[in-house]
Length: 93
Image (cartoon, rainbow, N blue to C red; front, side):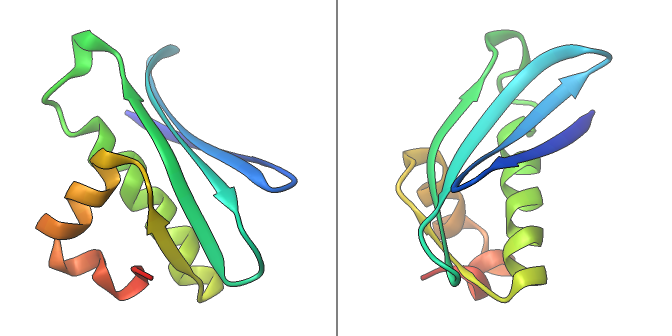
């Protein structure tokens, strides 16, 4: 599974690709120099339950850590992951 990051201005995404097939996408907004807002997660039904959403979230967490910024998870999936996973709460706003 490959996670591809794209950013265009204030909008960004993490797309999960499985041998060229889109497995899922997580979108976010850059809300300033110190804040990312995760607003949507979508995983294709064939990939449900395989940790695709978590992989995409962790890739965005890497960005936040590298840039020393915080994340607001408006997306219900991302919010639930932050509640379950203590190892990523350091970037939670």
